[in-house]
Structures are given as structure tokens and as C-alpha cells.
Length: 315
Image (cartoon, rainbow, N blue to C red; front, side, top):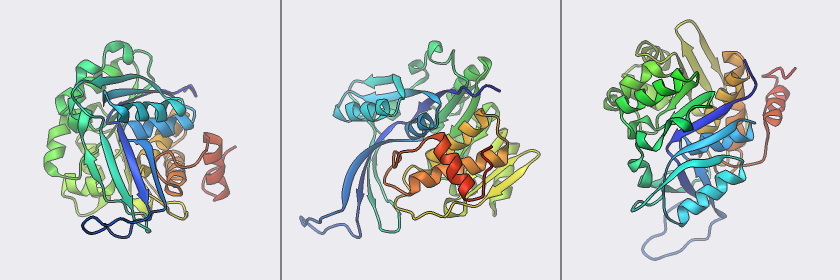
């Protein structure tokens, strides 16, 4: 397998605004001093694109943004990381998707979110020439397209030789699984969190739920479990690894970072256990700072971090 990864991150792109130092929301017209306010590119497609570019992938963002200053900022943040943003289409009459996340001292981050232009994204925004040179297509937020359209997009990518992955933005709800079910047989890697797996399947435990998603068509289900690490299930293999011990500043973007690290490792020909380790190690870089673009690191840095922890052989 070639080390070159030409990754198309399709779907949800968001401009996150993070406020750190929040313990309560001020009453009435009162104000409150905070430690930091900053913006970062995010979303199940945008956040994964940003981190994957740091890990050495050749990344193209494909999705919908508004014709506003939020879009200008989002584009600038992605370009700064080396992401090709030519596939982001400006939608007249829609604002760029954005969130405001007050980050609590323990890393929790409730959110206010505006869907914006992500709701206007359609298959017409993904012409064939955006897919022709990809080795991997990652679809973030298939629920915005619907199962049939998502299946069509993934099948188009596969027919051109690309590997596919899917990350769902919506909370775990059985109805959502039905909505996107047609996409699963075209998905090489499904990348949900543990709450989604249990909610989608109604299973009492994560392994049973992940196996149900494999039975529904996904070739591999890689589940993030927050502080517990990650679980990966295929028809023939089960791998579980713990999270890395880091001081958590903010968990925003940790799932997207895991996706980027896991998929990048697989593009390098690493086995499932090594890929999960690299995914968790990448997520740890994000958890130790503020926002999806926290810190500065390369693929070599992440592999060295995992090796120092005794979790990954970098030879």
C-alpha cells in the first residue's frame, strides 16, 4: 500500500468559537471575564481534514459554506493547515455553520450550534472531478444527505478505487440509523462514539452494538469511548485500547482527531491495533489544548508520543 493518502473530507464543516474558563452563564446583562476566546475549524469533515493534513495526508475539503465573514475565517484556518479548500462551495442566503462552546474546567463543552450551509449541501456539490484522484473519501455527517444519497456518494468513490469512512454527527437515535442505513454497506470504516452505538442499536453493551453495526453492513466499526479509549470491531477481530493519560483541557475535536489518526495509520498499512493506538494518540494531542487545531504536531510527533508511552513501536 502506498504511503500517499489523498483524502477527501466531505460534508460537515463548522467554525467553532471556544470560550475557556466558564463555570456558569452570567445572569441578565451581567458580564464575566474568561481566560481565552478563540476560533477553530471543526466538524466531522472539517475537523478531520485539519488533523489529517497535519499527519501528512494530502487533504481536500468538500462541502458547503456561506458567503459571509465566518466562511472567510473557516477557509483561512483550513488553508493555514495545508487543506485544499477548492471543494467548499459558497451558498448564497445561508450562513456558514458555526458553534459557540463554553468549555468548563473539566473539559466538558455544552454547545450552541447553527446548522447553516451544511443543510444546503447536496450531491450536486460533489462533481466527479472532486473524487477522481482520491485514495480515501471520508463522509462526515451522512444524515444531512440521507442514506440513499450518502450510499451513492460512497459507491462512486469506491468505484474509483477509494477507501471510504463515515462519521455521524447526530446523537444516537434508532431512527437516525434507519435514515442512513443504506450507506453502511458502502462504508469501510464507521467511526461513531459510544453513545451513538448504544443509541442506534439499543444494545446493552458496546461490543454487541458494534457487532450489530457490522452486521448492518459496515466492514469495520471504530468506536471512541472518551476517557476509556477506543474499541474496533470487524467480522473477525476485536481490538480495544485505553486512552492516553493527558491533562484534559478541552475535548472539542477529539473524535475528529481520532478519525484522522486512525485513517492515516490504515493508509500507511498499519494493522488495526496500531491504527487504534495512533488514533488515540492523535486524540490526546487535541485533548491537551483548546479546539480541534490545538498544539503543533506531525505524524512523527504523534508516533513518538505513543512510543514513549510504550504503546506503539515506531521502527
